[in-house]
Image (tube, rainbow over all chains, first blue to last red; front, side, top):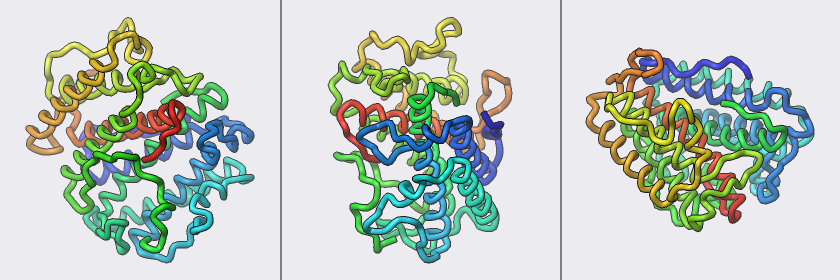
Length: 168
Length: 181
């Protein structure tokens, strides 16, 4: 598995949040290491036919896009979803090689690292969320940590079902 | 994002009993609320499942089960908040050096009792956190003897619960098809 930095022991809020978010991103990548293309694009749960490891990686990339660019910066939503295709960020992964999906994910994460570094954690998003309130950058970082970690739990099981590989 | 129809967002869990999350609070309130949200999410993922099925290993070849997870989470709460942060002199729950994976592997005990033990550990952990002067307060990490801050512990537990709730999502989906975030 890729080398990952776990949390520092006593760092401040910003260092702790950014380190943990990077750790969860790296864990998602580590769960894909050595996975065959066939398994990467197979969704083993019949009740969740879209949930392949490749689709989860694509979802994670576009979730970051949505929170940082659309919600926080207030830019126009150019994500691959629409009313007709609400899960477009997952279906768009079909046929795309896993290494390419991982590269796109890392590229966008690198861009958002710079964005986070340039803003105060108390800064509020340009666009409101569904309840009409404007979340802080702190809230977005914490949300992405728990969302990415939860999907890593999905990846744990998808990977073990695919080829028996387990690990933190 | 107000132009997207509600049904196109990921579906919320039925009978949602969780407190709405604060959106603009300071660090401590946001972090503790989010951890409580994940504790309750785990409880919801287990709610309505017949007791005997909670021990089912429903995503083979994984050995995970909801019963195994609740034992593991109870042990994790005690280890981080009580034993390491608060320095309480307590035995491990469902762990020994000779039998480290008994939390996930030994499922012949009373599952209802396991949930009561977990609830009690969560409650005690909340008290420990509430009594701490700040997130910079430290306990001692047993493995290194080094200080470990409450901030670090809360963040670790948030990521820990979220990942295990990812496991719970698929375990529950395989038991009766129920899904939701």
